[in-house]
Length: 415
Image (cartoon, rainbow, N blue to C red; front, top):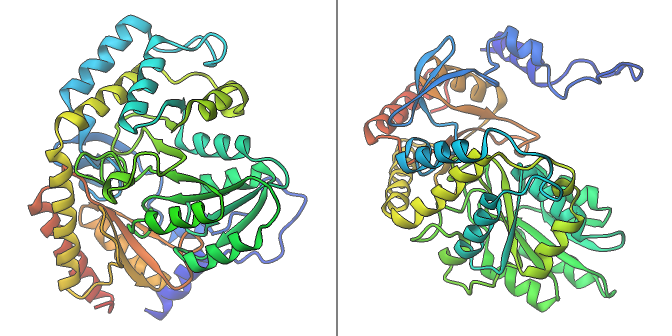
């Protein structure tokens, strides 16, 4: 184990301390070639086909149970969505004629934005070509120099990048620490824009943000609230509308509601929903909207059909959460640390880099598509496997995954 530990640590910690500052590109933060050499690199794998029941065909590995994706509601195979994309292709063709602002706005784009606004109970909505672009564009456009943005340290990278690009003063507080958030808010006495940004569901923990507590602080200190609902739409609430429904809070609790079209919604893109003044401002000022080509007709049609399916088939949400709860409970019973989450994201926290990497490799060799997550994505000493349960996973496959993870954990001295 000690020999393998040394090899794996070389893959994690880039051995080049003194970097050649004249070289392009600079060194990566981890030694990719060393990871490949030691057969623990499982990223950018080629998926050759998507099969029923949450399975995929992976180049060189064959059929695998997918625990590494985000198709929470299993809608990729839904016939209504397939039909909508085919019809859009026939009517609008494969591409667009430019940015939305100039020649790229189809009636489908406007229809999707109205659908999302209705689904999220807001006045209006704007769509972007990716969730990353939605966050970066919105935060960097709404805030100016000398404004203040408060950001949870576990927020997604797109939120952090948007805060940095905005040139506002960034105040990051520890994960879920509302006492520290209040201390920061209390310090600000100047009349400036204040924006609190959080993930509804933390993607590495599977935990749900304390929306009631955060909203109370925003009201107390006169701050706006933006929530990234990438992992909550289609997951939280009986109807899958997200975190406001989950906490049974008013539909205008969140000022700026961001979400993706690439997780529970099986398409590509991102959106921001809010009042008409904010959305109109973004459509005329957000660089990611003005200077990006419009999303394709097929992507928009798939997204719009998916929102309709979520409203028509709420039983998918209940079954998804039942399966996630079952998987989490089984892992707990076997002695694993799965954190405090209540969502389909189930972290299996191992702690040490080497043991986590070896367990991930064992799972992959035994037909489970799952990734090891290491610092700096998570905090030091909390390396983990991160499982994402979907509606498509069968109970039998989830049982197999638990048994395989348990066997591998015993093999490497984790359990």
